[in-house]
Image 1 (cartoon, rainbow, N blue to C red):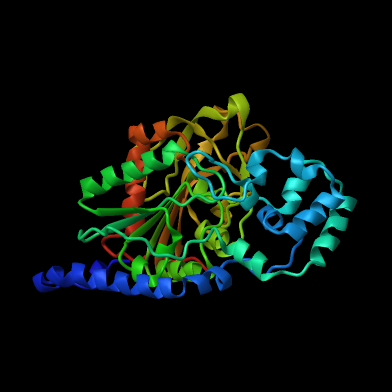
Image 2 (spheres, one colour):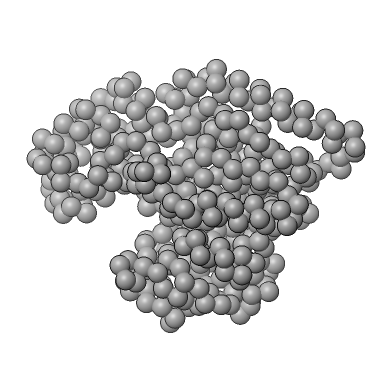
Length: 393
């Protein structure tokens, strides 16, 4: 988080602050680049994990031996899969989905009606495989280790918008959300930096910002050291704002992110087909506090509505907005009367807020949602440094 919460800087400090920031980032960049090759082989999650049904499907596709095992035991299976499940490159504007990175072997197989006895045979064969250096390198290839050039504002309060996508790219809405954040920041006279690179998750970089926005991210993005830097940043008073897909972790390899930062929420899906986008009533909770107070009792909004395995309310989060299921058709994803859609959470000295709203670009033109969104940015950035009562982790 930026130092304004702790230091009342005089004119002299403000004059040299850009120079100090540049030196810190240069040092971090040199350090990361010197160890880039090492980081690619030693610092990504599941680098040493044995092959199994719980492996990301991607691990099978990038290992010729593991791929051969699957092809031998399920002839024609790989050929029958959609391209989205067979790609090994990260999403691009032209290729929006790489589901192999966000689905386990079991998930892919069960969705194609592979029987349990067959799955257990596959699991035994995979477990017998050795993990090679080539496997390790391939598993880590999608993680970022080279610090990009960053244009960090000299404003007193700063927001970092993190746009990296690993599984499914929500397309134009990512840019619309980022522009909405810029617009709000302009109103507040704050600075904004936008990046697609997870290499910015270092202590030296993160401490320059009051808030990190995870903007419709999907899938696992951070190395182990990057995770640790972000955890420390939050616990020491940093802010997290997660938008829509940032909470949709079907195959989450980072328990802290889901169980602590998101308050234990586990996304289970949303209506599809003709029911994917529906108008529903977003009810602001009486206990919402600073965020959304002006929008009480709520308003109707057309959006894609996520459901969760259970309400995070039981885990101590503060529910800001609840979805009225009587106003739309949740189908098999019904949660009942307790269907939180926006909530906040205190972690250590830091603040976290998640909004499941944010799939359709049009919601960022809705005045009620933009007002709540602005409240969320201010609350999580915490410019006044007000203490946030932490729940037990």
